[in-house]
Each structure stands twice: as structure tokens, then as C-alpha cells.
Image (cartoon, rainbow, N blue to C red; front, side):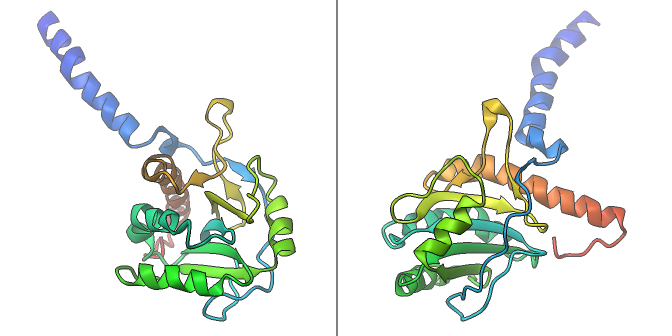
Length: 213
């Protein structure tokens, strides 16, 4: 009997613990709200000439800054680690706010992604520097935009326009650095899955589950 207990502790328990933590501890709770009810986007047009809004969409929100081409690797990282896995969900969009005048650079990035990706859920929208600064400031984040009005971080915004993240003092996270693929594969995907779980659970509870999520 004692031998069986020892074998269980040495071999079975570590495997169970690994599976638990590998699935993401946060997966059993809601992802906290960092900033509630952020503003919707202004009357800004995308590369397709469309107005893009945040209501009723799970949005991955980014700020490209003027150096889009220089930082294009960040979008390839995000595309590979997150977008390609989930872009088929109808309620998901990837929105990048860019300064006016960078349209051609943004188009080059989208065209490069389109060579191997369905880019229908990528939306690059354009605003003046003053509008971008004002919009970012109302997010009330710790991190700031750089001198080019950009940041490598992207942010998770839920369907109610709440910016979500981690608020624990030891593990505070308001955004996810696209320069580091490992951060996208780990922290971001863990938190993103929580958002999906929340909406799937709500749909199931209301007996309205669909393939949208």
C-alpha cells in the first residue's frame, strides 16, 4: 500500500500538476478589466475605406506608429502566434491604429501577410497624431506611446469595449509585446483563451451557442 502511494506521489501527481498549470491557471477565472468602457474608434477609415468599430467584437488593438515597415516583424509574430489560429471566428478582429500618411507602408505589410494568410480580419485604420494621442491617453495605461506614436504592445478589448489584462501586483499586464513571440504564445494566448471561454460559457448558459466563438 505504501509503495503504491509513493509511486503515485512520484509519478502521477507531477503529471496531474503539469496538466493543470499547462492549461493556464487563469482559465478558471475571469480576466480582469484594466480600463472599462474605452472610447469607440473615431470616424477613421481603414485601408479598405471602411469605418471600423469596437462594439460587439473581441478586438486585438495595436498602435503602429510611423515606423510600420521597420517594425513589421511584430505583425508577422502576432499573425503567426495568434491571428492564424483564431481569425476564422466571426466576432474577432485585429485593429491597428496608424498615423495618417502611413497608408502605403501599412498596405505593404498587409500585402506581405496576404501572401500566406486570409487578412480579412486585419484592419489598419488611420488618424491624425493628435487623435491617436488623445485616444491612447483615455486608455489610462501605464505604458506610453513612443515618439513615433507607436508601441510594440497590443491589447485585448472585449465586446463591451473593456480593456482586459492582469491586475495582480506581481503579474500586472495591460498589453502583450509583439516583439517577443514567446510572450504571445504564452501570456497572451492564455489570457485570450479566457476571454473566449467567458463568451462561450455565456452562450452555452443562454442556450445560444454558435460557431461565432
